[in-house]
Length: 264
Image (tube, rainbow, N blue to C red):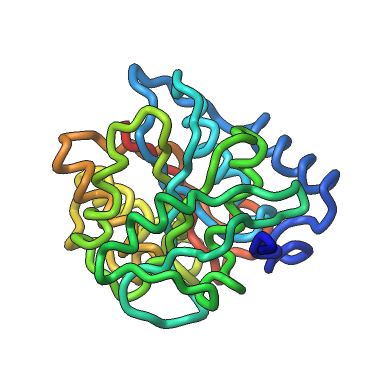
């Protein structure tokens, strides 16, 4: 039986379509990412998902922080919101691999099938087919941990408790990195966005699930599930970087907020 490979849906849009240019962009972002010292490496990160020209520098801060892990990462559990297809629960990808211009990344099929034992989890190729929020993270994974497998999870109408139940088996696994893909506020002027995103960052650090909804973070459902698990294990969430599209490649009249966070 032929291997099922999900092709890139966003090459040439959210990032360059050829391997050389994409690698150059990713490496530039990582080389210029601010480093943050910590006594413990992150168990999980939160990273934005716009086009690399907009949010790549902030995303690189989160991904580079995970390089502090002493055990090589073998699996990345990657969660984000479904922008195009509405559904209940959480969607795994039935593909065997995903393709970007940097090549193919194998999916953790065993992990996906195990999670599908939950009644709210389904394999749903259509939800993943054109979605950008997970794919835009993949080139960072391919660059930093080329042998790692990907477990991509799109979060639809699911509760924070449901997401937390999916993350719990991976918590503390030294070979697994959990990554939440989420932007912050959308389409406010620069100063308003800065104020909203600062409050959201404070709520994230405080683990205030009740204060983070779609107006604060488009990936709020996945993010709040992570915060529940982090709180259960008494793990702090640290803000690494805050900016918005007005700081990178957009005008300041209508911006999107980006944040990089780590759960240590």
